Image 1 (cartoon, helix red, strand yellow):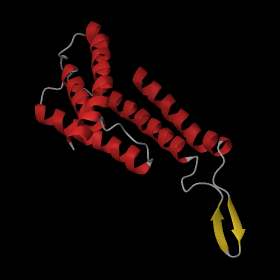
Image 2 (cartoon, rainbow, N blue to C red):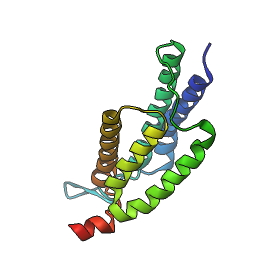
Image 3 (cartoon, one colour):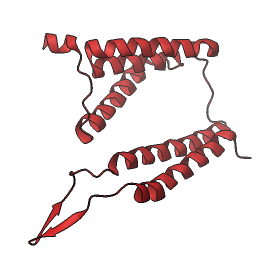
Image 4 (cartoon, rainbow, N blue to C red):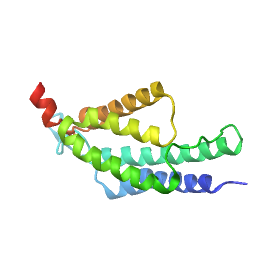
Length: 167
């Protein structure tokens, strides 16, 4: 029997495929090329308008597949759920408090330090016990997001006034 998470994951994956292979090519024009004296000249910017929607569609598809495989992994009985540090009823309020603190902290110390701290606190509240794993995952995830947005998509992330003041 297929679980609810697997069904939702299949729907998300199919939707991502529909986005990637139908809606994006039909709805968004790609960069057009004009022939001038033997040299291809692009009329638009170097990055196509399809790039960011494709990144999002592929990410949605990967997360859908992750949902399917995690459900199958749980059904196989290979995973024992740990009790989280925070009770389920108060998780929403804890996450809201952490996000409000993150919002304030990101403008003070910048994206890198605020995100590492917020991810670490969230992982601890949701049951991750090992400090070395919390630090490793927080740092790797933060720098991956930094590389994607700052270096690949050229989106500036907040630096923070305290870091600018100290440096």
